[in-house]
Amino acid sequence: MIRDPRTTLAAHGIKPSVQRLAVMSYLMEHRTHPTVEEIHNALTAEIPTLSKTTVYNTLRLFVEHGAAAQLTIDERNACFDAETAPHAHFLCTRCGRVYDVPLLTPDLNAAACLPDGFAPEAAELYYRGACKACAPDQD
Amino acid sequence: MIRDPRTTLAAHGIKPSVQRLAVMSYLMEHRTHPTVEEIHNALTAEIPTLSKTTVYNTLRLFVEHGAAAQLTIDERNACFDAETAPHAHFLCTRCGRVYDVPLLTPDLNAAACLPDGFAPEAAELYYRGACKACAPDQD
DNA sequence: TTCAAATATGTAATCATTACAAATAATAAA
DNA sequence: TTTATTATTTGTAATGATTACATATTTGAA
Image 1 (cartoon, each protein chain N blue to C red):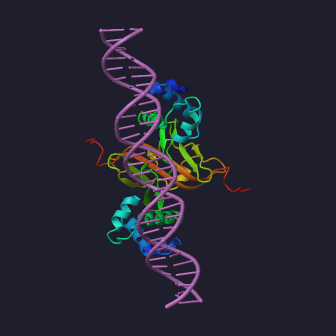
Image 2 (tube, each protein chain N blue to C red):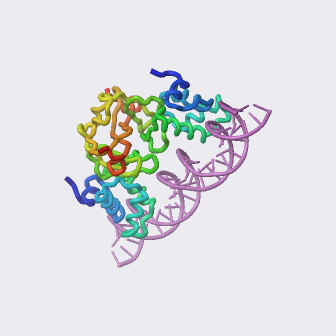
Image 3 (tube, protein in one colour):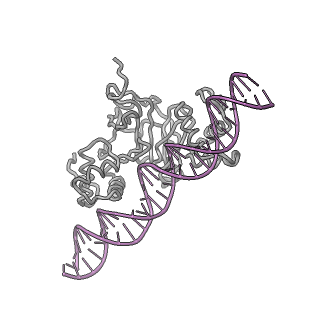
């Protein structure tokens, strides 16, 4: 299991740079599925000149190389995940947080009856609702 | 099984209007998961004064009342589906079409291990890849 | 008819994302 | 080292979907 940002970039054929390492580090240390805005805000402390365009470009590069996944669960902003092993996501429509959810069957391609000739390259399972912190107490 | 737009609106507690009936009719007759733009373009033929804002408002109303589902599979535009029974979707990243895909197990809540206290209200399963028309021929 | 509420319209804002050109940094050759 | 070349980053300006909001129109009841 690869753990450090530099090795992760190398494993996906991405040349390192200060900015790329910072974005990958942030993604690996904050499993909160951050948006571009959140990543940019957080990293300007350590890289004051970091531009938002660079964050966009860097994340696009990561996604193209399979080093990160882009989630469309939040209709307003794209959010990003450095964990590329299969898992589902839960968006709390109250607080806006996105949670990881383990899949019972990791192969999502087996969950539906894909027509002949269709070649899926990625699959995402999204839930929306109230998280534990926001749900009305049931007990 | 409800088939006509007027009954569908009524079943979801939505008062009918010329515009609402037109949008619902369009959604029911065109299972292509159209965007706001596509719906508006198509309906201006029959309702020349139809404003795009009305299409937005109407679709929001439908979604809030459960009469339609909003898909976030396409990161650029929201698209809409009048079929609210459980099924998955496939976005062809080549041609942009969104296809319906039958689920093998209709209950998507059983596909993942949702943490205790989490209350899902909706679930979506999305595939991305090449559709049959766009996939490189395998034979 | 008249009035009040609901619905629709059009324009102007908002805001995430992308395009693009200039600046900077990294790399390799001399 | 210098120099030249390429890759990367930056900032600003466009783009385009969506929303806000004020006005107009329609609907339905009295």
